[in-house]
Length: 191
Image 1 (cartoon, rainbow, N blue to C red):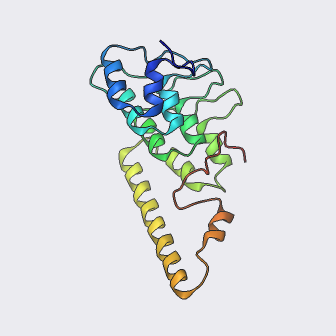
Image 2: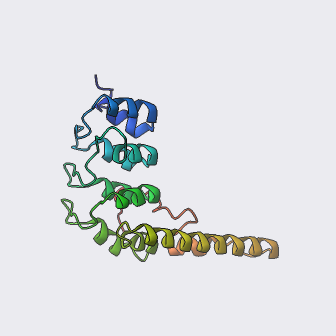
């Protein structure tokens, strides 16, 4: 039985973060490589939706059924491409830790790494994140750096507000960054 969006139940559960349902489907040996009409898998829809819990369960469950972290859809986008386009840093980190390849090219000839390189002016953090290669210590170092930058930005905003000055929001917009470090929800990452 498929829902009205033509998604198999395993994909619908992954996309909506229904972890108990997803776990039961995985336990029942649901086909994690089943494809929707655009060629994506459950891991694609979970990554695109920013469902970290679903991504974690698909890659790291106790039922010995794992999703292919480098599976490509009809556009040759991998789950990493999709998480990257939508700025889901927590999902990107999880995919990298499970061996996502930053060099796989999609139909447009873009790899996650080349896409991040093109956008480094707008979002320098994502390039740095991809360059960690999934190394646990490098990711921890990266996250600590970002935490410190965010704390400094928040402290400066508070100081400016107390002094009656600018909050710095305009400056952040010029840099193309927001405190949440997202990629501004740009679906395909157009520059």
